[in-house]
Length: 192
Length: 189
Image (cartoon, rainbow over all chains, first blue to last red; front, top):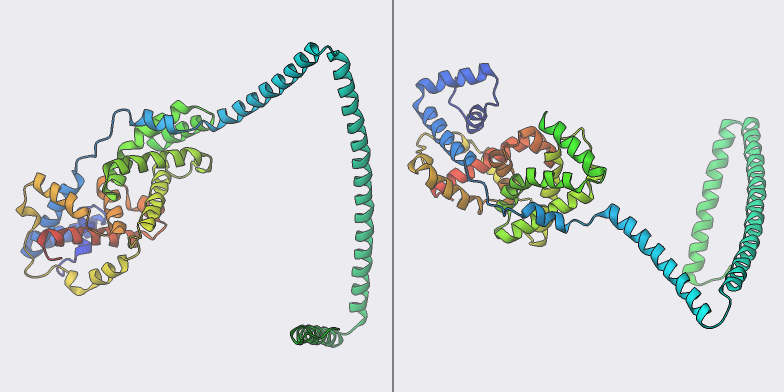
């Protein structure tokens, strides 16, 4: 066996080699002083590296870190509660204001609910009409699209392959010439 | 119960809303993390701040953790990315390993005929102190791998997964780090 290289030494020391390869290295270092010394040297370095003392950490580190973590799930709930409390306090303040100013809070709230119901009814009718209109428009677009596609399909059945290729090339040339024509017009400032 | 299975259960509990379970994660991983971060940044307080930041980030991203992987690997990946951001902000050269790789690959990195023992000239405690000093001077990309392998005692497979590099590359770089430390001990560099 040849003298060891550094990779082999580290793989051997870290137990990363197969038993056969490790055995061959053991046999080699038993008689090769140079390799034996190199292995010892790196083994000592490895022992020192693996026994480096751990870094100190404050006892209350975990607690401190926990205090920095915001409870996200609780935040959502607390937001919900805050909104509910806010809304209730607004209603309560209005109620108290109407009572103190001599108005009848019940009739005010009845009028408010009527207005709300009326707006809701109007909005619902508009929404239903819009949905109906959108569905009719999409049906029309779909039918036009299907008609165009079936037309193209029939045409491609009638036309030969060469004719189709020729048509595509012609369309391409037309497109390119149109593009450059428009571009030229724009660049020279001419109007079409 | 294996550590991986234990971590999986703790993570499930955290996701169900138990903050106390996350405290268990911190207690378990604070020492490995500070051992890594503490050697990546020079200032102790900064190391503490970074470690806290990593735990906070991991808490926020815990729903993305896939239990088929080791939790420690996932956590160290977050830690490594945090360190990369830090090096970028400090404008440290994080990708200068190739220079060392070329140097390492030269034939002279075979054992030279007149190699003298260097490490063995020190007492073990002295040698540990010297290694800590030298670690501060070697490139962070190599230092990181050395710390994971020999201080955090991660396997090469785990390190390869964290860094997303082939195992062979990781091994080479860890060996380079060790040879650099040895050469610094010798006073060659």
